[in-house]
Amino acid sequence: MAAAGGGVGDSELRLLGKSSSPWVFRVRVALGLRGLSYEYIEEDLGNKSELLLRSNPVHKKVPVLIHGGRPVCESLVILQYVDEIWRGTGPPLLPSDPYDRATARFWAAYVDDKFFPAFSALFRSRTDEQRAEALQNALLVAETLERAFTECSRGKAFFGGDAVGLVDVTLGSHPIWIRAVDQTAGTNLLDGARFPDLAAWAERFMALGAVNEVVPDAGKLLEQYRASRAKWTAAADSS
Image 1 (cartoon, rainbow, N blue to C red):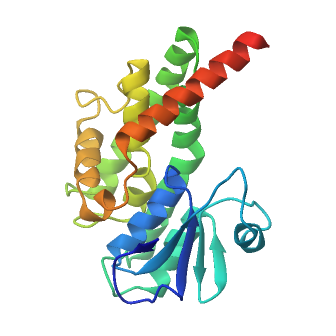
Image 2 (image 1 turned 135 degrees about the horizontal axis):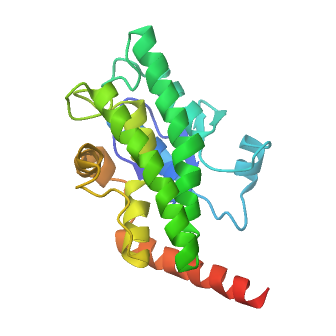
Image 3 (image 1 turned 90 degrees about the vertical axis):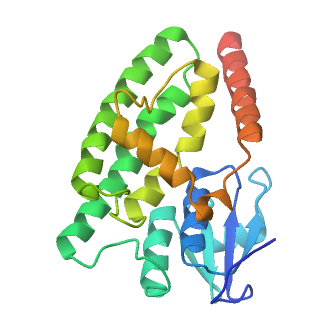
């Protein structure tokens, strides 16, 4: 499957991924923002290809970006690689000012180190008690991100200011999964009344063309999540 775009031939740029993966999604958005053409290879993670195992022998996970035959692994590393290699072909993910660049890297790491574990606990909660505790923890992290948006955006549309930046793409890989959890569990993690800036940001990000081109089908994602919850519940009941 080839993605539309320009600037780099399909034979030179390939992405190994899984369409439902938020980590793969963020890389596809970044490539789309750059207008890059690449070959997208969907992986069966239950039967990983030799190309994946050879390209990422340490973690054996997606995404893997293969540029000119050389693999780059881990989504945040890939995002910064794309930003450095194709700087000038689109809005930069990282700002030119060293302090602003360090700030963006800090909050991108916060998303992966703090937000995702909190959201993952909510994602995997099975009982009302687990869900209530996980939601409260996730809300505390969301409060921090609401303040971070105010600091980073400086009154503009995105964490990156007028244009999408590293933090936008990093956090933006999660809203579609958040919606699936909210619909299933009756939660409201990005509550517009509690987090007006973050909720409005999520709507703006999800409306971007580069996002719409690669966003997973919401219905299929919801079906996948509900099937996973049923398996987790059955496993817990049988243990």
